[in-house]
Each structure stands twice: as structure tokens, then as C-alpha cells.
Length: 341
Ligand SMILES: [Zn+2]
Ligand SMILES: [Zn+2]
Image (cartoon, rainbow, N blue to C red):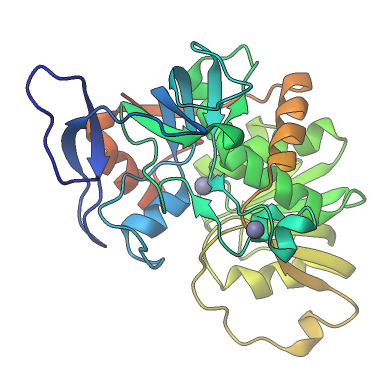
């Protein structure tokens, strides 16, 4: 099991960046190569992107149900070993592994096509070891076939930034043509391009004074870019908040029109400050998005096939995962950080 044994010299081994406790740096560990159980596959990891959720896990913003744990849930890998009873995957296939690593299949949510809300889910890099590693074992039914003709480092960010971004975009509604994106990180830089391709007008809100981030947003087609303390030139139909600051909620409610919708896309946010009811009144809606379904993944990968987004990547060797996390925490990245084993 995780963290208990070092690999026997000469025996097949893998390496992984391991979290032992909240707030601690990840530590490189050598482990025996795991064998996939029934219904599982073992992948050789080709790339794994770093998501803000990984940061919330490492920093202890989320409860940690399993320790030690290998974070990482935006994995692109190659199928290297098949456990018993695996159908639909062959050795050598390139697949993606997202955050949803398992759902129970029989709770009220799973029964209603809402496996993202499953009562007994297992999330990759949270309940089971993830992709900050040379190898990973995943449930075959939750691995996504990948046909995109892009290098693995450019596909990895699609596995969460892209998929969750897509679920947020759907939650914003098909008629939200004037769309605001608060926090222009990995998810927004992908979803801005998808929204543009759908004919929507994108408004990017960054940290106040982040001119480089605003230029980056304009270079990807944003019609307007400014600080999160500014109002857009005209009220928005909807806004998606990707940044983890609760103070963006009243800011975004101020920016949307009557009947407009604000979607919170993150798994964790700082507390939302008290705000006047009139910001919500006139049928404005405030909703959140949690996790993803495999249907979201299929839909988004089809969209990405038709309108392949430019994916801006900063690559780090796996051993420098802590540096990638620090750069994400410090807001020093344009686009997505990706670890390469
Ligand atoms: Zn994520
Ligand atoms: Zn379920």
C-alpha cells in the first residue's frame, strides 16, 4: 500500500510525488510497480496537469480522507497492463484519467445521470493515488479514450480545467452570450476559446492590475479584459467564477443583468462576504458546479476535437512538482502547469 514499502532493488518500480500531511511538501518515493486488479488498468503516465484542487489538497483546505496520497487528476497515460475483466481498452491505448475515478452506480444521483454528485464517489488523486507519478492504476470504465492529435502535455489540462470548465459553461446556459470569466487561469483560458467558438462574447476578470493576465485573455479572444474590481462595459448574461475568492461572488452578481446567473466552478472558496439582497434580487441566480460526469467528458472531448483550443503550458519535471504548486499558488502562471515524468 501507499508509502509502506520501498521497491526491491531490481524489481519493477515506479516513482511518485507523495503527500504525507496537509501543508507538507510532496516527497519523491520509489515504490513497487502496482498490478491492476479486476476492472483496472495500469498506465504509464505521459503527462499530468496541476489543478487548483491539487493545491487545496496539499494545503489542507479540503479534508484529507486518505494519507499518504499521490495527487494529480489530469492524467494522460498509455495503457501498459490490463487487470482481469477489462473491456474496451487495449495495451498501448492513450487515455485520460479525470477527477471522477469511481461512482457507485446505484445511489439516487447515479440513477439520475448525476454521477458527479454520487454519494460514494472516489476521486483520483484524493481517494486513490493519482498522476503525480510515473505510473498510475485507474478504473478502466473511468478512463477516457483520447483521439486528440496533440502532445500529452497539451491534452492533460483538458482533463479537469477543460472538463470542469465545460460543465461550468453549460451551467451558465446556452443563451448566455455575454459571458464573464473571473480568474483567468487554466480553466478560463480553455473555456474562453470554446465560448468564442460558440459565438459568445468573453469578458475576462483578473486580479486588479494584472495587465499581463489581461493581455493574455485578449490574445485568446476576450472582447474585454479588466480587474475583478471593475464592471464590464454592459451587464453580463452570466459569469463563471474560477478563482477561489468568495469576494468575487458579490462582484460577479453586480456584473450580471436581471435574470443573470453566476456559476461558482471551484471545489473550495474563501468565505463569501455578506452582501445586500438587491444584488441577488431581480431573479439573479447563484449556483455551483461540482465534479464532472463521464457524459461531460465525452461532450467536451468532442468539442475539443472540432475546435481544438490553444493550450498554454508550463512544463515541469515530476521531481519539481512542489515548484509547480508554488507557482500556481503565487499566481505566476499563464495557462496550465504540467508535470512530465
Ligand atoms: Zn481539477
Ligand atoms: Zn452513486
